[in-house]
Image (cartoon, rainbow, N blue to C red; front, top):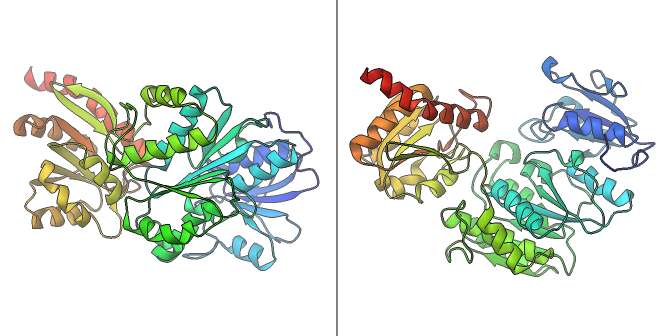
Length: 443
């Protein structure tokens, strides 16, 4: 289904699609529906099903003759080592593109002047993307949201001239653009992440700054200034033709937003508010949208209360900077953390350690986190698994009179879970079982 795109949009084009997971399979289906010839492959046999018969499913050989290679965001084309087919494609002059680039081309080739809003940053981009879409919907403005969040870009429906595409853009997607221009673009923040894919912080930052490429006078550029790296870019970006608007979470929210606690969410809300106003939402619609926004799963999501203890799922916090944003929201808490630590571990969280009544550690790098906590005199235990950590956290919260149990791991999840969503779901399931567990122990 092309969801309104003509079946001739990409007629005569030939694409290679490598990687058939959450992004690649929908892209292959959309390209075929728009008239393209598509060759696709994934080394994982489990990912090769559910494709139209028109897709040629076979290992990719000679890259000559393709108009582009659409490479799954998780597959590198440069660092740390390019996928062999990507290397051959680049050597043959075949562009490596994000499907967001192809969406932009499909929209324009179909005759639509729909606008594009792009949001990036190390942390907060999913919340800001979802919030902006919610504000536009509240204002009655047709929009479709996706990209790195939810639906693959090219699987989004065709919007007419008055519509807005709201795209969460990862650094992997941004480095694979050629012509896509964002009418409204935002870089929220930047801290070290994905350095294996970009070489160093300068390479990572350069990829993120690409969200402002090709903007024109009259477009909107928004820059968060609550971290040192983005503040250092302010003067450089201010010299561009596009007026730059800076935002900070320090001033708090201008409107009530119950699902957005903390200064970091104040910055997210400021970004979404500016972009929504630029895209035509009225102040009243923005205020109503902020008040009614439900929040996103696994981003400081309150999942339940047991005997006066509130359980917060912040499984999306896969690095220390993200965990800092959650830790800063609560005065006293029991902290569940651990998994696969990022570079630097949790040392940067030391100013917030005084809020932690006790830390319960899980996953591969629990000993690394424990060593940091021990140096700072923070009470902690290594429990290895979520199944052991959740009931222990409940007991610790009661013992220490801490009203919050916070899962904000500061680590990646792939040592024990398929992704952060699976980690959060396991946490919620274990919390839901707490009353029964303690009833059984009492009987």
